[in-house]
Amino acid sequence: MAPQVVLITGCSTGIGLATAVCLAAEKQHEFKVYATMRNVGSKGKLEAAAGDTLNKTLFIRELDVTKQDTISSLVDEILRENGRIDVLVNNAGFSGVDGIDKRSIEWCQSMMDTNYWGVVRTTRAVLPAMKKQKSGRILNVTSVSGIIGTPFYATYASSKFAVEGFSESIAAVLRDGYNIRVSIVEPGPVATELMAKLVANQEGHTEGFDDKLKEMYLARAKNIRPLLKAVTQSADEIAKLHLEIILSENPHLRYQTSPAMNKMVADKLKDTTTDALLDALKR
Ligand SMILES: *[C@@H]1O[C@H](CO)[C@@H](O)[C@H](O)[C@H]1NC(C)=O
Ligand SMILES: *[C@@H]1O[C@H](CO)[C@@H](O)[C@H](O)[C@H]1NC(C)=O
Image (cartoon, rainbow, N blue to C red):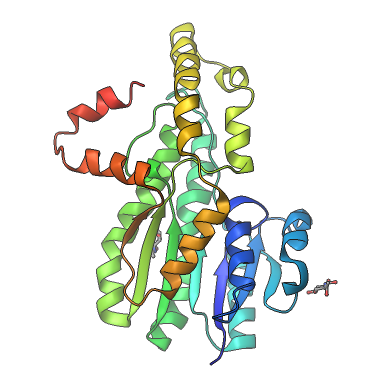
């Protein structure tokens, strides 16, 4: 059987890197992985992690989810070389603390452009081929912040809510009309550079905050640190789940990545007023 052709965004570190390496090294099933990143100058870590899969089952390419031409030209290249594209993993994204009205609109829009519009652009680029094939898998990596609001991360959570809303809305149409299966993967905290940056230098995140906001932010950051630590997962765990979803014959629409995250989401969904959530989020 021909290998499944996979395109993954955001592979210079973290979940994207781990997923690319996990699929490329898979022995039971064959994958041909196009592992992409915004700036191919940052490929060092991925190259090292890829080992001897490099240029055999793992191919590193530049793709900036905010630049349509970089997406189109890579999708064209993949289709030229393989005649098909089986799996898209929308993983590229970034996060950052915001103090509600303390970040510029431009900052907020640029996060939305990568985390939401980036997913839309990339998905639209692969859909024509997947529709023609009448098969395809699209995985959107969001976050538990895509279903539960997160104090001081309003823009990030909004970008992930947007991806969730879009995904949920189109999933049935793509499944029933074209045999394209969409899944949303909702990790909680994952030990990645993105997380490390957020946890380091807490004072630095509060630039421009008024005193009340700063006090609330720092207290929360301190309180949730042990909680976060207790539920933090490795990027490899998320990568294994991605493999499982891709191989699953009948994938779910949504996956939480740990029992702790599963409980958080279940607690929200069972209370349709979500009043209890406001207190839970105070922690
Ligand atoms: C892999 O391919 C790229 C070009 O696509 C090339 O620059 C690089 O040297 C190759 N690396 C190995 C280890 O073959
Ligand atoms: C992922 O999200 C994008 C944009 O929100 C959407 O176009 C796509 O269909 C979604 N895919 C899945 C598998 O949920």
